[in-house]
Amino acid sequence: MSSSSQTSSISLLSGICHGRVLEVISGSEESNGASSEKEKNILVLIKDRLYSLKIHQTDEIFQGVLISFEVTENAKVKNLKPEQPSVKFEADGDELRWRRPAKNPSRMELLRTRYKIIRGIRDWFEQQDFIETETPLLVRAPSPESQFSPIRTDSGFLITSPEFQMKRLLVGGFEKIFQLVRCFRNAESGPLHNPEFTLLEWYRTHEALEVLMADIEQMIMRLIEMLAAENFIRQIPAPPWPRVTVSELFKKHFNIILDGSESAVQLAQKVQHSGNEKLLVDISAQSKLTDSLAYEQIFFRLWNHLEAEISASTPVFIYEWPLPLASLARPCPERPGFADRVELYVEGMELANGFGELTDATEQRRRFEQDLKNRHAEGRESVPLDEKFLNSLEHGLPKCSGMAMGVDRLVMWLCGVKHIREVLCFAEDEV
Image (cartoon, rainbow, N blue to C red; front, side, top):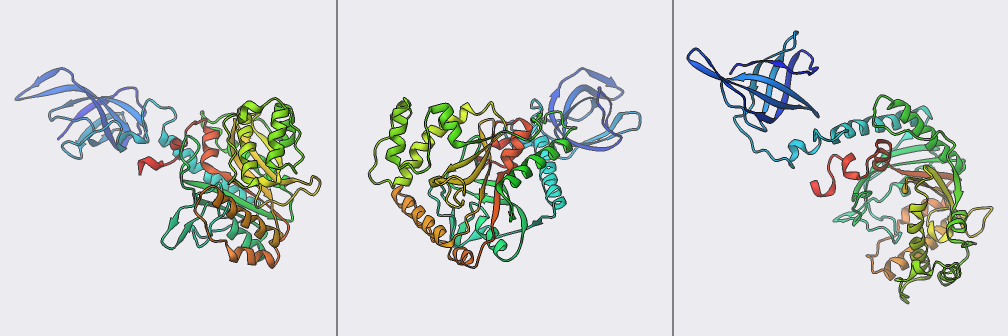
């Protein structure tokens, strides 16, 4: 089959091109000796760009077929050949899943940007003399924290975080380590969640949590500089970004003064006295809940209301969380009752979560055992404790700080995307 056509306001480089016919527009029929040719326009999708070609073709061209053609030095198209006679074409199939022409940027473009962001993350940590580690995805004992639903396999659990194994590396003498790792949390789906996701986690020994907050600021500004040519990358305020405590937010938005030592009953009383009891109206008293679970239930009912209020202050670091809400963080030396924990929020979305790490093996075991009681109270599956991790803590974890950041959410934020599926090759329901 041979063909010859003129490109129409396109900028294809000369050479062989491969694409998919997205639409065939019928044209006029012309007689040429013994045969006739139909002049028609076809829309061809090459990667995630759409091109219009006017062709004179003797054979039929069908929607959806893969084609190849040659672009000459003077921008003419010749030797257009379909790679199969016809195909099944679905607008919601894999043909267009990543490259819908009407979307700008396309999902394919977002995935290209994701690759650049991950490469930039690795480059930044290498420049800071970090070592990239690779710890197991399959472990015998996952985190026992009650909010997690780990995925069980025949031989163990898929990790919810690489934290325990990375801390064992710190016990063994590593000082500055990072990891880009796939993590798994069952029953977490939605605009900001996918059961399988990518986590960036890093640790510094003998450094305060504030140093890792500065790491985030410097790394993200470097990424924005690297992506400057992408016109859809949002502008981010220059650091330092605001720092505010949980107590300051509760005082400002609820007129509630937290001291960190409240029981669940006392926290509920503070909510009632502040005039915010309507936020707890459908929380029923459940005697089977532990006090720490009841505290979390009340706290996060308020916090979920507060997240929308802090969305305008982006990005913002929120630190000094009540101690019951940080199973692996050390107590704040200056503020008893509060944990050395920070979260980075951007537009109401949690992006990063960091701890001044707990190094006391006895206290860590006590907290894990409380986590197991909480799991039982919530009717969640019990899990084994990671005895190798707890034993390692007994040998001495150096003073250290750690940070975890959701890479998928980072890409979403920098690219202005509202649903996590747009920055994943495959979301949960696409597999």
